[in-house]
Image (cartoon, rainbow, N blue to C red; front, side, top):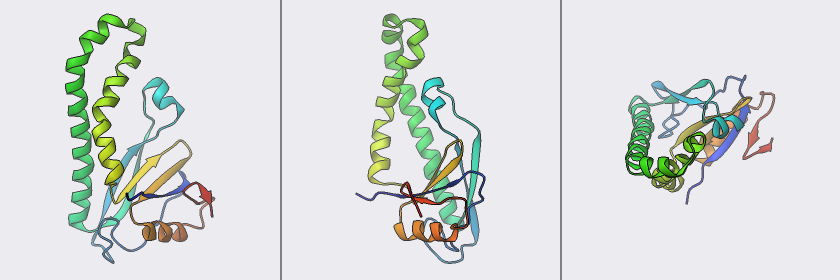
Length: 168
């Protein structure tokens, strides 16, 4: 099972990428891909609210950029559809048994069950490149370990660089 290699950099640092496509690894790609994500933290699960959006521009071939964007969009649509279907079946029975103040949190359980197949798929078939933003840092996950190490070395002038949580 392939496991992505994660590089952690400060959020205030503008990351530099090796001159190759983050998807197919072709040298000197002709465009870039913008990967958007939202900040997450302790408040995400407690308040069910995400933080400010973050955009990362990475080098990618024109076709690879579209393929990466489509796969991310398809994942959101499929997850949303699965959650909507699950809520159609579960909302009324849960609403009848759970106090109103806890209803929002009680609905998390069927929502998580609904997206479990997508989570399992992403675990066994990770995307070639992915980002996760926290309040003070950004994780850059690469399916290819060599790309991750090259990325870490190029960004060694940042205040800190962590590979799989270990500072280098």
